[in-house]
Image: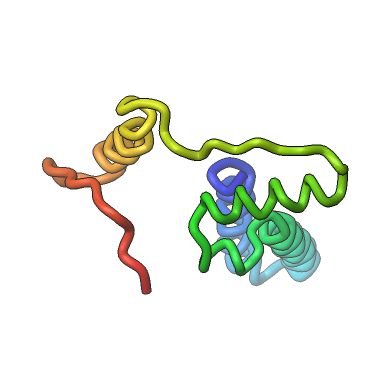
Amino acid sequence: MHDGPVQDIFAALSQLQVLERSLAGDAMAQQRANQAVQLLERALGEIRNFIGAFRPPGFERRALGEIVEGLAVQHETLTDQGVELDLRPTSATARSRPRSRSTASCRKHSPTATVTPGPRASG
């Protein structure tokens, strides 16, 4: 969601802010542009709140496996249905897939010729 609509809305917002400044001599047009800016800013705020609802702060402090296990326990508790989890990678391919995707993304978005995958630095 962040890579699509949010970026498009932010780009439209930026263009409207430029347009708003260029309309300094026309109060009515400037007011309409300002209203559009406010609507887009509110929409961005709502989207950020919506996205934030799916990423509670605890997610940043816990490993993905722990989060999935917690969600499974929650599901069991709420539905009285058992959940069996095996979070171990099943093959070398499964372990290397995220790394190869990260490497491809780095090569696509970075001018550097060398990519060395590794753990993300925190802080």
